[in-house]
Structures are given as C-alpha cells and as structure tokens.
Length: 363
Image 1 (tube, rainbow, N blue to C red):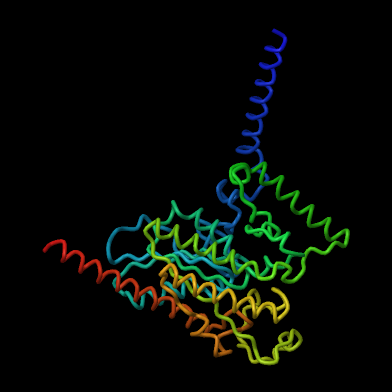
Image 2 (cartoon, rainbow, N blue to C red):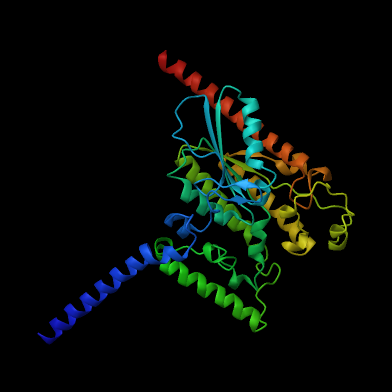
C-alpha cells in the first residue's frame, strides 16, 4: 500500500510538472520573446520578423520577402517561385527583380515570388526553411542558391568537431524533437549555447580554426541541397539549382579591398560588401567555392535537375560584383534575368509536354 501511494504521488508530481511546463511554454515564455513572431516562427528560428524592414526589404507574414502567398490556382497562367539562399539572393531587391523578369517573359501570367533567402544563411538552414514552408506554399519552382556561407562550417579545430547540422554556428542550427516543439527547451538551449561561446572566448580557448574540417562541407552542401531537391519534387515543384557566382579581383588583399583599389563595382550596398576574410583566407575560400560548385554540378547531373550555371555566366566580369560574391546592381539584374530565362524555358517545355500528353490521351 505504501508503494502504491508513492507511485500515485510520482504520477501526480510528473503530471503537475508537465502541465506547468506546458503552461509556461504556451502562455508565459512567449510574452518575453518577439511578439511579432508566431510560436512556430519562434521555434523554427530562421525567419525574419514579419511586417518590419530588413535592409530595405519589407518582411511578409511568413517571415520572408516578396509576395504574400495567396490561395493561388491551378491555371496555366499562374507561376509561384520560392527562392532559398543567403544574402546574395536577398540583397539588391533580388526577389522583386526575379518577379519583374518573369513578368516580362510571361506578361499574361500571375507571378508570385517568395524570397526565403536571408543574410548569413547556409544550405542547412535552407532545409529548415523549406520544411517550414512545405505545407504553406504550393510552389511551382524551388530555386536553390548556396555556396559560400557553408564554408563557415569548416572552421573548426578538426574533423571531430564538425557537425552535419553546423550546430556551432548558431543555436538554431541544432534541431531535435524537443527543441522543435518546446519554447522553454529552445530558450534554455540558446542560453547554454551562448554561455559556452562566451566561456571559450573568456578562457582564450581557440575554436574557430580555418578549414580544420578540410572541406567537409562539400559533402554536407551536396546532401542538404539534394534533400531540398527531393522534397520539392515530392511536393510537385520543379527544383532549380544554380552554381555560385564569384569573382576574386587580381592582386586581392584586404587592404586594397577596403581602399577600393581592386576594380569592384562602386555602387556598393554596405550590408553586402564583405572582404574575403569574413569566410577565411583567400586560398581557402576560393578553393572551397571551386569544390562546392563542382559538387553542385555533379548533383545537377546525377539528379537531372535544371541547372543555371551563374558562375560561368557572371564570373568573368568584375563589374557584376561589389566584392567576391555580392552583386553590383548590374550583376543583380543579370543574375535575375539568367534565372528567369531558365524558369521560362523549363515552364514552356513542361507546358508543351503536357499538351502533347493531353492530345495523346484524347486519341
């Protein structure tokens, strides 16, 4: 009888604790966090703050830029595009440029472009973003543009410290069932993560070592992008893959870059003008970009994905760039046009195939 009372007491204690945690998670913790973000956005952690501006771009309800998503329709005159990437896919009003180029190519179509690219984001974060968007956006095309930000993940002491989820870059890289469903757990983990980083710096321990993982991101970039390709196809969307465009000026040094002596475009956007050392030494970054682009080309071939070789199309002219990878206004327009033309070609091809199939069915 005594043990029965103990068991009942433990059950009551655990039940009460669970209820209190649930109340804290749903009602209390959100009051101390950004109120413009939904509970889901707080847990996901990879969106911008809705209805505010970020680098001159208005953030929509979903936490990204571009069109507010409508109900859409099944008409052949409706095209919806989702773009995934980092700052190069975000700055210079890139989302609007892509929409404008597509509208010029399809003047009788309704075009919606949701720009789910945000500064500093890497390919792992884009897998998280696409998972968040899958049940909200019935996309026709999912555009993937990554290459340079993944290089940060190699900057660890050795292979032993490398993680496929890049969890040492930010606390929101780490995913688990508990972290994805509990704001209390997410807040505790974020606090512990920041404390660990602070302790590393305070004690003088070195964690950030350039390319300690020896280009391990070639594998993870390929895996992350392949995951998005597979999920997009499962959702009935056409994935569009692009190589990463970049240009290293002749005689590059950080000093010459800061002094603007290298010939990069002068119409610079301050938020997107970075020296190469932001990602690492010149030799490491350029070799990493070469390896990443080769991996993306191989993936495109093996998975039969529509590929836009932006690097080949843009990299020869320094006027397309304001630094190693961020575009000038001219480069941004060319980039958007290259992408729009590839989508247009694929869309026209798909419609022709559907028409042939329809005729065959009738006969």
